[in-house]
Each structure stands twice: as C-alpha cells, then as structure tokens.
Length: 316
Length: 314
Image 1 (tube, rainbow over the protein chains, first blue to last red):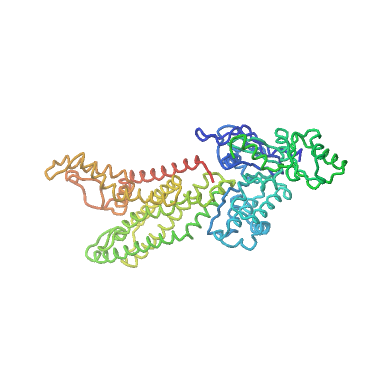
Image 2 (image 1 turned 180 degrees about the vertical axis):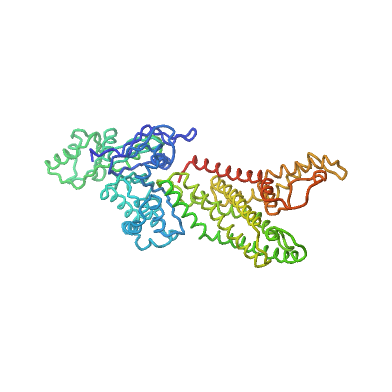
C-alpha cells in the first residue's frame, strides 16, 4: 500500500461562488486501491470537490488530476475511468432496473453482446436479481442505492466516487452497502473515494480519511495517525479497572512516566497521559499482582477527531 | 464515442416520447380536431367544386373552414405550439428533479450531447407526427373530394409541412429553455403557455394599441394616417412568430395571395388576376421563413450556452 501510485491528485483546488468559498486550496492525494473517506459536515464542500474531480464543475483556481488526466481539460477521459454515484441518485422510473443499466452501458460504449450478461452478474452482486426486471419506480430507497452501485460498476471503473451512499437507508441496508463498497476495494482493487458525514460508517471501511470543514482540509491521513496527532496535542485518555482497587494503585498509576492526571470514580480510573503508556502500565500492574479487569483507550474513534477539529473551527 | 453517446441518448428520448401518455394525449387531440376539420372542409368543397372549376382545390382541404370548424391550417397553427411546448417543458428540470441528470453527466459523454439529443429527438417526434397527420389528411381528402393533388399543390404542402416543423421546433426550443431556467416542471410549463397565449391572443391587441396610439384613425382620417396605422400594426405584429407563421402559411397554401399588406388600387392597375407561381409565393414569405428559423435557432442557442455553463448540483 505504501508504494501504491497516486491516482487522484489535486493542487490548490479552489471553488468560489461569489464571495463564498466552497472549496479552499485543496491539496489531496488518493492512492490506487485505497478507500479514502472525505469527511465533514453538510455544506463543507465535499460534493463540490467531487464535481470538480469529475470535471462537472470548473474550479476557480487550482487543478485536479485523475490517473494523469486533467479533470477540467479532459473530462471525458476522466469520466471513462471514474464512476460517480451522486447522493439521492435517481433512475428513469418507467424503465426497469435492467433497462436503466443497459442505457448506462450503452452510453459507455459497452459492446451490445455482453451487456445483458454483465447486468445479470452485477444484479446478483448487489442483491437485486429478483427485482432487476421490475420498474425502477417501484424500488425502495435501499434498492435504488444498490441499483446505483450496479450502475457505476457496469463500466468497470478504476475509481469509484460515492457521495453520501448510506443516507436514508436502514441499518441492515447500510451494513450491506458498506460491505459492497469495501469489496470494491478489497476484492476488485478499485480506488474508492467516499464522502460522508457519518463517522462510524466511514471508520469501518476507510483506509485513510480527510477531514473537511468549511471548504478546507483540516487533517488527512490514516485514522490511527490522525488519532496519534490528536493524542499528542491533547493527551490520551485511558480507562482502567483493576482488582484490588486500593490507594496504593492510585499512587502507582500517578508515578508512571507520562501520566498527567488520574481521576478515580467508582472503581474506574480515567488516566490522562501524554503518550501511549499501555504497555508499561500493564507491565507495572501485573508485576504488583493487580488483575486488570478493563483497559480501554478512550476515543480513538472518529468522533473524537471530528469533535476536536470541529471545535477548533467553531463548528459542531 | 461522441456520436455513440448522442445516438444512445437520442434513441432513448425518442422511445420515451413515443411511449409517454403525454404524447398519446396530444396526438389524440391534434388528430381528432384535424381530421374533423378536414371532413367538414371536404364537405364544403364538394359543394363548391360542382359550381365552379376552381384550381388548387386540393389545397382548399387544408385552408377552407367548411363553416362549422376552423380549417386544418388554423388548427395546426393553434395547436402546433402546444405540441412543441408539451414535448420540451420538462426536458432538463425533469431529469434534475428525478436525480438522473447528475448521473447522466457523470457518463463519458459530451455535455452538449444531452441537450442536442433531447432537441433532435423531440424534433423527430414532431416531424413524424406532422407528416403522418398531413398524409392522413391528404388521403382522407382524396377519398372525400375525389380529386388528386397536382404537383404544385404537393410541393406547397411539402413546404407547408417543413415550415410547420420549424415553427413547432421554435416552441420546443423555447420550452426547453424554460426547462433550464426554472427548477419546477410546472413552472416551466406555465411559462411556456403564458408566452404562447401572449403571442396568440394578446400580441394582436398590443400591436393595435400601439398603432392606434401613434396614428389614431377616425372615420374621416386621411388615407395617409390609415396607411401608417396599418403599417405600424403589421410591423409590431410581425415581432410575433405566430404572426409570421400565419402569414407564411396563408401565402404558401393559397396561391391567390399576392401580397401581405395593404394594396392601393393604383398598384393593382394593370395586374393580371391569377394565381402566383410557387417561386413567387416563396419569395413573398422568405423573410418570414428566415425569421422563424432564426428565432428557433436563437432559442436553441441560448439554451445550449446556458446548459453548458450551468452549475450541476445534485
């Protein structure tokens, strides 16, 4: 993964609408085969960024490349290798799912003789085998989204761009869709760029994320790196439960290197440290014959990162 | 690739139009009214033919009203714009509202392929509809009056059909433009109908108002003022494509029309009564034809440019 080539690159990508700057000097690199999450609240400029990457909107300044093609100058070349699933995707309602897919396939110049076979395989993949010959107007939101995934896969794209793919879908559906998306990268080796404001879902599938607030990329990288970054600046929280729970333990914990603060509440220690001391902590406690009932590094999930960056920006 | 995309879109649009209930309804209205008007005209002509040996009887099928119903040409002039409007008013905003536009634009096709295909497909539908209808009318007419058309009549009908297609395409282009300008399909449909009403009903009143304001005509007004009044009225009226079309149609379908304005008796001195040859009729309405064509192209060009520059947000 380290040596993978960069497939999406932007340089100072900026989009202004009058006085309002939707995207501000975005520098981004997405590597081939990874799942990259574009995270941020609504109106952060995620969709605008995607539209510029696809060449659907012209940037005010800066440039974007997908697989070496300039998005603004060669939009057709870009769109040939990139599939885009917009949020609230729609289909022609008086056409069946199959007809909708066939239409997309033809627009992409796929050979007529293999279209139907391809559709059948894709329908099976997204779990629409039974509904594929029904009118798209009768589809539920979740089915539409799955048809949308089949729709973007029909041209066998190198890069898949999904805009809020899990919006308005029930939990079971979300899980299935996330699994599908994950497989796009893991099994098919496609690059996936996914935009969302739903952290927990992104955490499950993204290799790297970029956090986007008010048109600016505040942080980006692997999730654990991001978390370490946060930890370095703000310290880390450890939750701990031990037995026996006595005064001595308190002192022991305070004595550890890197510990800044220890609070003790009904048997639960909350320890603020400047670095990850779990190894030393466990070692010391075990040596003193304490049994560890519970040890959890607080935060570490996107919520903490999110909260932190948004708080910094005065957005929540 | 470009042609491929355009062709695929074109085929889909064509199929959509032909299968749509909207098109069925419109076709039904137009077909029924037109055939009824031809039937009533035919009955009238049958009586007239017996009395006098008139030339260009066949063309009368299209232009004479037969008493109870307006003529075929009048009906088409009235309903044609509606057909054009109906086929285009939701061209772009309909796609947008269904969420299919952004999906479509993300495909590797040129952006203009979408609007070109939509316009071409709707034009094709208009053309098929009008040609079929005219042929049906002609066939019906032959059965009814028993006189086959002569070559000149055929060429005049052909020109009439072409002109009408261009005229309907004008309204199509206009309604496509509205479908770009307005987010709601209902709004764009109403806007189209408003413009249509304005040109069909109010433009004439409006022209009269201006003319009477500038050159009031009373009972004893000098001929000079009457003439100027008429000139202004006609000039303003001709700003309306409806007016242009109506004048052109009358001239093309009626070889007896020699001029489209007031004629002084002195000008008629020495003129030989008779029908105008096709070339001369065409010459008379050439500016009209150019005007309608230009308006159509202008409407399409504006929507084309607007569509190419429009921000596409889901």
